[in-house]
Length: 403
Ligand code: SF4
Image (cartoon, rainbow, N blue to C red; front, side, top):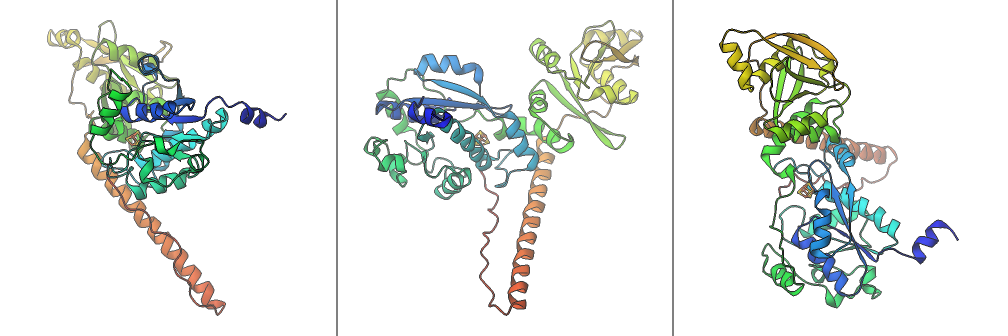
């Protein structure tokens, strides 16, 4: 017997459910379980969303089987290439994100021998990615039209083959739509869920405070990966423009940040700090190759957040900064004056937003120009062959939409 026949003969689950930890995804899983289907929840996580550490809690609290799946690198690839359907109001590429997650879900569905991918999406709940036309684009581009089920809104949507064949009992699915939560709360009561997750939140890409941290990484790092965005989540973020390039420093605000930053050091980084005095942990990404003047100013900035260093400088004592490789080898040491006026700046959201808008505008313009050029080439070819011009078959680029 071939491997895939074995999988089909002995499926490990009937349905996989995209599980965010929010109420809607819990209810989607419960609705399917209620009709006797074996459900495996998939919890996707990345530097921007997800909480794999909560899986145990969710399993105990909601009595669901949940698997954590890291999509961080694939998500970074999406961001590096820029989303095909544009960013939403902040740095959230919701449609592309859903397409990516559904493609992953399809692979896991097939691995488990399941026949259905279910989500907790509710028609009309969010303007962008849960509108009917957006849902259709997502289904099509993710290649899940034949298996994607939205149990909470199924009665507003055409049946999928699993419903038509009776594998899923459509009469036990729901027709919820809109932004209200009344129906979901009633359902939670019916399923005796004692702990109701709070709505919204959960994705850092929708929050300006986080997006301002991510944008310089996306703009200035040559090939940003998940570890870079994990670093951007930590402590204070500073950027310096000098010598025709930009330098990135992350600095701890407390013991927890400092521990996380020390753990985030990678080959090629430098740990910037003070020689012989306590101070915050500061990670210079790719800092092993920074010029001495940049390391000196990074150390001066770090010292300005260290009480003992500033007090020593005020007493007229010389304070020394230093930079070390992750394994502790010193690569620079020199006298510094604690100072926040060294050119290092914390990234702000407003300028980032303008840059993102301009970048999106140029990208849409370039796509439109390419589309028109292809149309013109087709027209010319038809004219050369003596054929009548055909209608423009290419769809327009989908407009920028907001969450
Ligand atoms: S808010 Fe958008 S980008 Fe963030 S996880 Fe949800 S769909 Fe993905």
